[in-house]
Image (tube, rainbow, N blue to C red; front, side):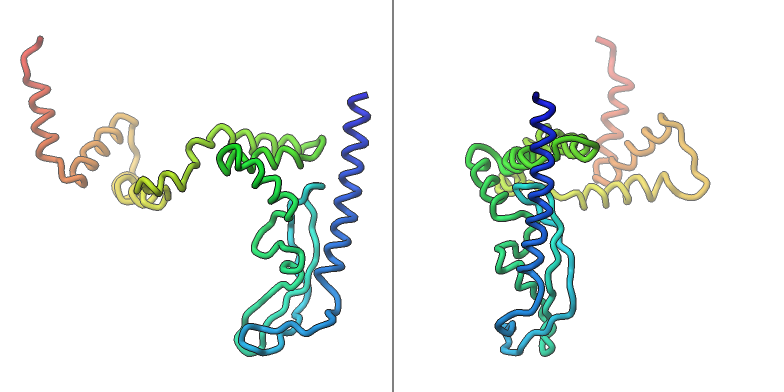
Length: 216
């Protein structure tokens, strides 16, 4: 019985998603009863259709909407996105409502995971892939509280670390023709880190002391 229920539910959601995509495309494209005005006052013109992927309560859908561009200042706009309250987002209002409700009970990452689980495909490879990605976020949610980390003055980007790897490791150990053993690379990078951190003399003295101090 459970298998039949899942199959029927999956088919119903799939049919609903297709119907919703057709409805959304009808709102987002076609002739408009009123001209689209730019903030500069000029009338914007349609330059064709663009696809948009949206996560809805029925599952992911693709809908087509008209792109309007201002001939005076070059500003672009999707009136359909504004009419559907999906401007600058890939989540439908219904999904955003579920996410907001869930976020009131926990972190934003946890909220998005709970909302995502509610709209997973019922079966197949896409469900397995999505479930794996959701589990990754759930497992690392504590490491993703970026707002709290920034409030503490902590740096959360990876650019500094990546640049450090290039300048410390890459410039010394990845030149043409270089081959390193693990122990050799470890030793030279310890020394290089000490030098670049301006602790070379102090670290060298510490090492000399460790080599010469009497046994306990």
